[in-house]
Image (tube, rainbow, N blue to C red; front, side):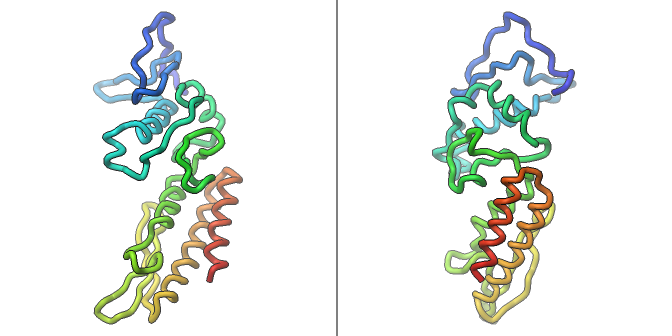
Length: 211
């Protein structure tokens, strides 16, 4: 934490529910301003953003993929989420809900993990990497010459890397698979959670064994 987050008065009045569901039961001030700038407790920020992704109608209208997501009852109380987060390797990382369980819609201690932003983006891009509904992942068709090019997103910040032009769609896709697998293994080297590392290697294995 930091010394800047001062304790609340013993008889402080509880504020309204966060996003209509969350209880901020912190015994210190989680948000305040210094010279007009908002200072937010990092634990509270993660908790608040998690609730926003699940329960803010404005957010859901912009990001419909989060429709149907919810937070487990235990984490609706800030102190419980904070206790869990303190025990994780969380600094500079994203709270992920669907790496451990693909398609998971519930934020809970057994279903969530902190991962690097680069890992989070790579997995998301891998699951939505079709450039055209009729083409395999990572492949683009050059309508001028009828050939297929291959690209993979990687690096920090994430950028498209050209992998060459090929005569067939499968050739271009297979090159994408190899590079994506290599990227996942490199990302695994930057993670600290053994479960995350294992999953990244499994993703790489799956890409390679289908060649």
